[in-house]
Amino acid sequence: MADQNLDWRTRGARRRSTRTWRVRSSAAIVALVVLAVLLVPPLTNLDQQAVDLTAKLQPPSWAHPFGTDDVGRDLLLRCVYGLRVSLLVGVVAAVVATVIGTAVGALSGALGGWADRAVMRVVDTFSSVPHLLLGIFVVAMFRPGVWPVVVSVGLTHWLSTARIVRAEVLSLRSRPYVDAAISGGASRRRVTVRHLLPGVLPQAALAAVLMVPHAIWHESALSFLGLGLPAHQASLGTLVQSARGSLLAGDWWPTLFPGLFIIVPTLAVAGLGGAWRERLDPRRRSELTL
Amino acid sequence: MLELLSVTAGYDRRAPVLSDVTLTVEPGAAVGLLGPSGCGKSTLARVAALLHEPYAGRVVIDGEPARGWRHRAPRAQRTAFGVVFQQPRLSADPRLSLADLIAEPLRAGRLEHTARVRELADAVGLGGDLLGRRPHEVSDGQLQRACLARALTLRPRWLICDEMTAMLDASTTAALVGVVEEYRRETGAGLLAVGHDRVLLERWCGRTVEWGERGPADDA
Image (cartoon, rainbow over all chains, first blue to last red; front, side):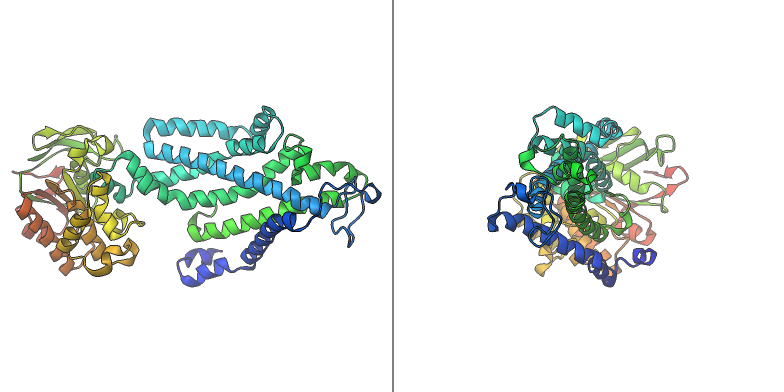
């Protein structure tokens, strides 16, 4: 690791960092997930809700590779549909969180002074409350559905993006090219829009990608607690939750496969995001963590 | 007349880099400010260009006191100065082509820029496809030529050159100084050139001021 840090500028090291087995397998998994989520529902004419009480709680077999649940629904199909909902919620929530975080961070950094201090104290206050608690509070104010979960995850996860973007804006703001722009008559807004925001966009986009797994976990946690999505919009969290009963009876597959569907794709997205982060700025790899 | 009167400035109020510094540049004059590295001459140049707010003291531009700093300075006062910095890499937005870089001050004021950019590029000697390139695709010297062109875009009455040629070779230095002098002959603009190269500044400027123990020893 140490010598990679030293020679990151050379072509060879850069090439190495994007061609490790970790990056390749992550890319393959992400591609597979995207294809499955996009193609399985329209191509296969199967009903994920189809109940078959004669085949309930069957262990994995050729007919049902992931087994069936307690009312005989095929778990592979349920997992793919659940992943679809989870990914949608995760991506939209990550985008919401990143847009809020970038706006707040850029505003705070660009204004500076007392406005910056006030905004960052608000960010500190929000950070001191556990994410999940705040998320539950938001969800509890609405009827169960996709949008309350998106809003809840989005509203609780913009804080780290705001911090990253603010730090980046502060460092860009002191560059001589900003001085030159001011001397050239550029307004505050023009400096922010033309010079500062384009400079932080790579960092913000990376934060958004790394936010996707986090958002999926939060959605799963909320659904597992019974506060997330309604039963007809089953997500991976709902699947794990409804499998609890059968797990106690010794049937492991309704818990294991949805669980793997949460863990493996999120690790793959995180792996890709990590490689991107290393390319963007290898010196700062410890700052952005999941 | 550009007057810096009893300026105290720095980055920590308890330990200012400059205290009680006074310096004047007569209309149309060229003043060179000589001093060792770290003495605060760049900070003084930034104060003069209204880019750094001093803790105390005043800046008077052609009889009119500066009414603010950075964005709070009125646009007309800010654009009265053309500033060239030491490191062209840091003073150019890496995303803008050289043509955009030079046109930026005109764009910021929503003014027509095509003809002016062409004229300035010719003046500083940027020809061929260089204007379409981004900063990382040109040399330091070429980039500094573009930065000088940008400083001249709005026809400033004052030029502030902060170690403009410190990173450059002799022929580029000569060319850039030539461009500045040509511009001053045409417009009668004043110049404050900051540097540590005594030979260059004494040849370039009508008057050089040495940075002493407590700031520039200005005997004008």
